Image (cartoon, rainbow, N blue to C red):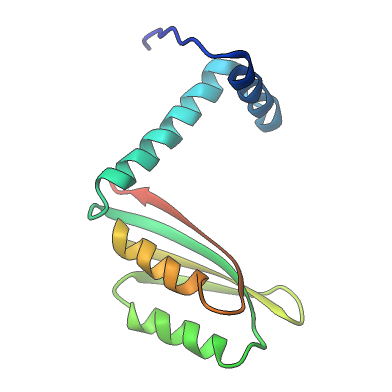
Length: 133
């Protein structure tokens, strides 16, 4: 390992310390290493949107919304080249959670995600992209 000296203002250091305690890191170095990895991952996605990636799209929707389940299923079938697997869970009487495991170019995964999560009656959605190495 290499030792690097970084100067942080008090407010930023307080946020690092708060994150360290909230997530249970043993020290600031571990916290900053994870934050650096996360930032590098995000930068890589922004620089190489056509790079091959894996993704997990998690979303919650109102299953009673008119034709939404059918539209979401049709959307997945229309993008069968991206969709590896889907998990469907009934949360309660009104809501369903789905997790779609995806594989393809980062930009295609983001477009797929945007189309799903912007659908009316989709209440929550988040895409996690992992660049293939």
